[in-house]
Image (cartoon, rainbow, N blue to C red; front, top):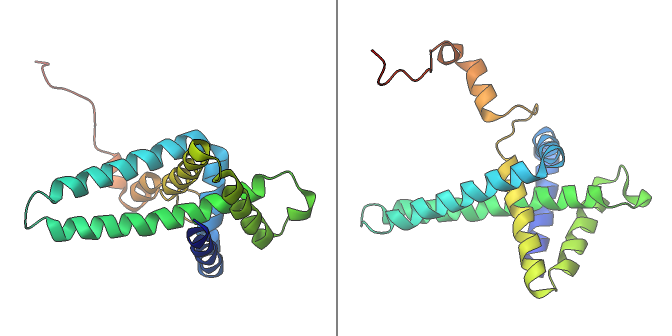
Length: 168
């Protein structure tokens, strides 16, 4: 909807102000491998939704499920904000080069136009959100969360991870 796009634009502007390196590295991750980031985002979103649904079964898990769905909604808006920035930057208009705010608005306008087509628009919007969700795994300097964790805890990398079950 139009309100969701306006909210995503506002969120992207706030992100650009307070975390520009993270926004740039997330955009680069999408541009570098859009299919892989979309799949990571889709798997993460569906996995979180599945965990949330399973937690609703118990009385104790229901509050946690609400938290999971709330965070998933927030993450979806962040993913949309990043996706709109990348979409606007990918448009072949010379007047957009080097102007991130114009790129963001152009990406939102493009999505708004495509979203008017019944099934294709919904699928395109979902792909854009999933790509943004998948790019959240990238840190401010372009490293994945796994690479950052291995730098911080090098002793984990030294553990021998070979499968030895069944060998004698």
